[in-house]
Each structure stands twice: as structure tokens, then as C-alpha cells.
Length: 289
Image (spheres, one colour):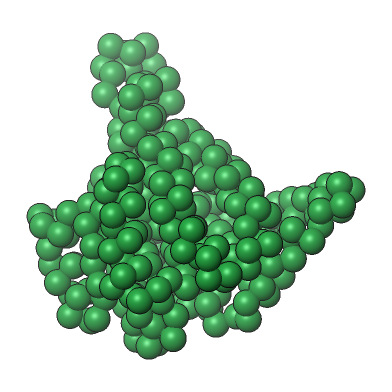
């Protein structure tokens, strides 16, 4: 039985993952920004299934430190940390204000750093641990209207590359999960630019993001395998693998994009190992298959 902490446990990926891990006999705790409001029913369902839920805001350092400490105490330890909390954004890149960009990065990048700084002292002290991260296929490539979100996930991938090597000597393995687009409430809470004065300068093109989003929704409706439960299955499969033998990146996609990203990931894996070998530090990659 593993002791698992999931940030964003009430979200589209967090809830099915928590329920799947509980069904498999794991002890699960998770964080939400607030137990009330739109999260209330989900929190009640998760707690009824056996999860411990703590209030925690990953954009606030004190809240994050307190929330992680509470979760570790409730679990009686921490074996697996799943950095899953995130926020999306969508719109023409020029229209995105610096403040709107900062909000996305504060959750998706700096928020992960806050959680890691709160959890890693415990994992390093015990000499083992597994850290999972929710990235995205567009954390590997960039597509129109997702520039800010892609940039945040590219940044996440970069810091996880460093954590992977820097934590390996402490017995802490790292795994990135890269989902394709999924039909979740994630799309309802995305940061969208609000700059009508600049938008006028784009003329008819300003209507294209909405048309593109509608097309994506239709595609997802027509792809029944592209569902959040696939993430839960991927997490469970990773945790079933022997320690130190898990892949560093796992693509979860049924839209046809996944194989291309996997090809890219394989090439980067080879380049990374070659560079590390040339510098005499290839052993820092040994905690992944």
C-alpha cells in the first residue's frame, strides 16, 4: 500500500485517479483550494471513498507548506506525490496580459515548486519516493491560442528534467504524464484574455479561437477513449512498475497525436543520455527505465 498525495484532487484528473488508487488499497490524500462551493460534492464523494482532503492554495507558500504537512500527517508518511493541480489558458497570445500570464505560471510552475519544497525534505529524509507530474502534449509542442499554457508546461518539463537528475541520488524517482486534450471541467476555468481594444486589430481572425475550440469539442465527443479515466489508469500502471524502472515520460492520448510526441520524446531521451554521458553524469538518469 502506497501513501499518495494528489494536488488538485477534485479536478478532472485528480478525482478519477484518487478513486482508482483507493480501490487498489492505497492511502490517498489530496488538496483543494476550498472544500466549499463547486468542490463540495466532489470532496464529500472522495472522503466517503476514504480520501483525506486538505485545503491548500498552491499560489501561497504558507498555505502550501501547511497543506503538505497536514496531508503527510494524515497519511502517516508520503511515498508518492502527484503534482496534478493546474490551470489552463486559451486565446490569441498578444491579447494575454502579463498579469494573466503570471496567474497561469503561478499555478502551473511556481505552484509545483512550492509543493516540492514542502514535500521533498520528508522524501529525502526517508531515502525514497516517487513524484508524478501532469504535463501535456502541448508541453512538448505549441499550437495556436495555447501559447501561455504551453509555455507553462514547457517550463514545467524543464524543471522536472532537473529534479529528475538532482533527486536521483536521494532515491526519488520522477515521472511526467503527458495527456492529450480531455473533456473535463478544466476547459471551463481557463484564463482567457480580455483586451477588446487589441482584439479589434485582429479583425475577422479574432473569431478563429472560438471556432477552433468548438472543433476540438466536437473531436473529443467523437473520441470516447479520450477520457480522464485514462490518466487514472496510467498512474496506476506506473505505480505498479518496479521502483526505478518506470518511464520518465508517459503519453496518454487517443486522438492520433500521441505517437508523434512519443517519437519526439524518444529522440530527446537519446540526446539527454548522450549529453549526460559526455559529462560523466549518466548515472543521474538511472532511476528511469
